[in-house]
Image (cartoon, rainbow, N blue to C red; front, side):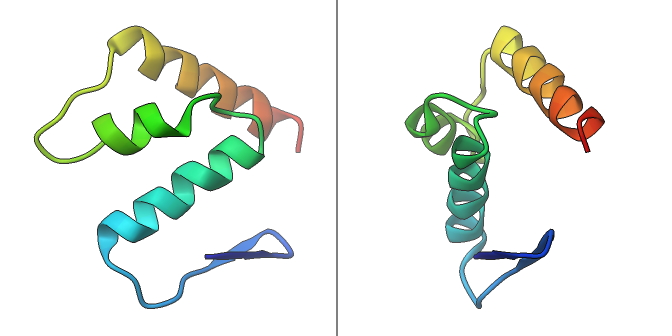
Length: 67
């Protein structure tokens, strides 16, 4: 995945590979601290801790409000 002038351009990847790229982008932007947690748990058949999801939502909202 490439970030180009605010647009995300995907290469042909599996959905899991795309998700990992998106998680890595959130990490690079400082929105999440531990990408390994999200790579392991934010997939079909797994769950994330509700408190972590709430923190993620708040951080994304804060990031978007800065734009």
